Image 1 (cartoon, rainbow, N blue to C red):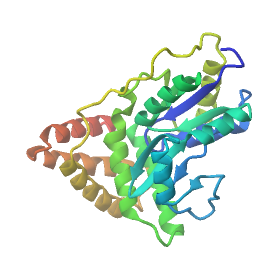
Image 2: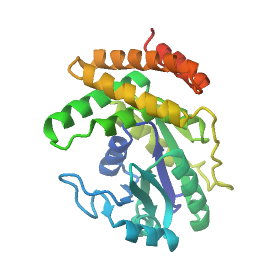
Image 3: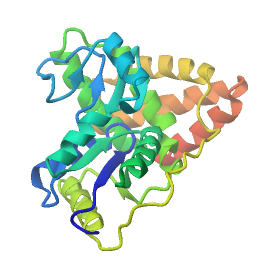
Image 4: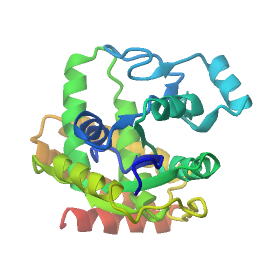
Length: 287
C-alpha cells in the first residue's frame, strides 16, 4: 500500500474481545500512525471521562441535527442512548496525517465502507473473535469490579450485554467479508501479536481501494424478543447467584445455566433458537 493512500481501519468483535485495547495499543505504539476516532454519544459521561477525549458528548437534540444534516457516517441506539461516527471526527484524523481506527459493529463497518468510496479511502475491516468462555471470564472481572466501586451499578445492563455477547454477537463474524479474523486469547502478548498482524496487513503493497462497499449479510439466527427477554432474566439471576465464584467457575456455571434456560425455551416459539444456543454453549464448555 502506498504511504499516501488513506485507509480507515475498522475493528469489530464480540464484547470483551479486546477491541478497544488493540485500538489503544495501535495508537500508542504503531509506526503507521493510527489514531482512534472519537465517537459522538448522547449518554452522560462516566466518572473520569472527558468530553472531546473519550467521547463527544452531545444532547439528543444536537445528535438528531447531525443525523438530519447527514454529518454522521453511521449511527445506532443502545439502552436509550444514541451513538455515531461523525464525518468531522474522521476528517480531523486524516488532516493530522493519521489513519483512523474505528471500533464498530458489522452494520457500522458496512456504512464506513460506503463512506470510504466517497472520499477515496480504503477500508481495512478486521474482526477479533473470542470464545464464549473467555467473554464470560472477562465479564466476570468487569462486573465484580464495578459492583464494588460503583454505587449506581446496574446488573440489568450487564445481563443484557452478556446475553448479546452470547447470542447476537456470535454471528457477527459471518455478516461481513473481513480482511482477516484474529483469535483473542488470554495470553499476555495476545494484544501485541494482533497489533503486529494488523500493521503487517496495512503496510503490505497489495492493499488497494475496494471497488464496491462491503455487503452486510443478514442472518436468521438472531434471537427473537421472547428469547431475549427470558434469556436476560435467566442471566441476571445466574450472575447474582455465582458472582462470588472464581473466574473460571463463574464462566462454566453461567454457561451451564444459560444452556438449561435455552433448553426450557425449546418448547416455546423460539424452539429453533433455543436448541441452537444450547448446542453452542454445551460445545463451548465441553458439557
